[in-house]
Length: 359
Image (cartoon, rainbow, N blue to C red):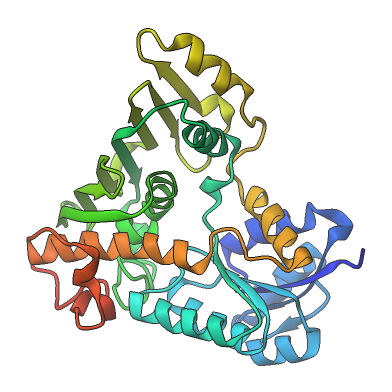
């Protein structure tokens, strides 16, 4: 097979995970070029990873390298523009989280995707570890019974110096605080497991950091399947943890990690009398894949090769982004939010802070 031609836009720290995942696929992939407005950073990145050509703009990259897939690894405020150029050129594109700063921006990409022969995907790698796949299989097989209660905590620590980077902690460049920039990974996995949300009630605070955005949110989410969840997003927590817990009729399933999980991070606790049903099914499920970039990368490359829709389609990404928007809307309007409250007439459709935080 001919290698898939891939390019990277943005060569900061997160781009290293992308290019290493791509190059781990050996002859399946050829990373043909990279783009960055910082020439020194671009040169160092290309030299380190053996990338033959560097560019200072996306248009030249697309024209000269003719990639089949582009990974967008810029700061969040530049995601939409880069993705639009790729879709306009008929090139498949996967963007880092959050995919865009607003629902309005994201819907612009959705329209561009409809008019293109290419697709848009978002990097949400926690869906692709074997623990999440095992949980979804048991749910599909009816082994666990109905989902009832969930907990979704992203409690991390970022000091003031982290937020003092020019584009961080700002609505106009990062789209939000820990809810948007950190907790979105766990929120996406919650969404992937639980499906469509129906109502959100939340609060947001600036407890300890000097920032335009929040440094913590807490909320409750109701889902169409009848389950309810509590969700906490914090950058104030010295003991960091990414924790999801799903209580079903017949078992509790939990995962605790920080920035990526393996099989060892998952536990299952059967309800009394269901041990013989639950434990063998859990042990027989998928094993051995961590929730790293490469796990999603494998599936993305498969979609390019086979001409199929990508893993984490634009509609799935939008559902996650909408849940983040609902958290902010509920916190700042001090009322429960349903999906129909986030249409184009809502201030929270145009920007995540809506008509302004009330700190």
